[in-house]
Length: 89
View 1 (cartoon, rainbow, N blue to C red):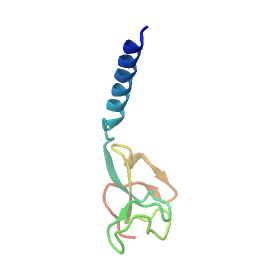
View 2 (cartoon, rainbow, N blue to C red; view 1 turned 60 degrees about the vertical axis):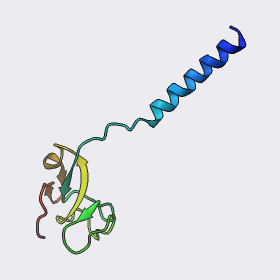
View 3 (tube, rainbow, N blue to C red; view 1 turned 90 degrees about the horizontal axis):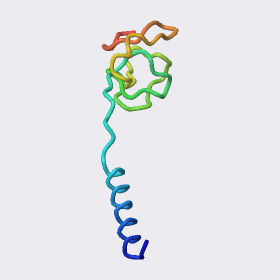
View 4 (cartoon, rainbow, N blue to C red; view 1 turned 90 degrees about the vertical axis):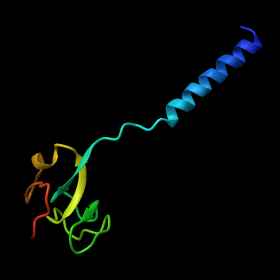
């Protein structure tokens, strides 16, 4: 392979690799699942605070965690299953 062919091949490979890296990955659909987040690991809350990571207790029924769509209500915790709507404690 001559030098020019090698340079073209390398440039093509680099361009392909950069294109693949620049494409956004398909975002997984998620849903808010209340009552499954551990203390300080919530994504948000409906009520006392609205900040990520601010829950003060495990499985707070008003704090949610983003989970893959369709999995929330099958999640088991010591306090019951996850819910798609906030529950008053």
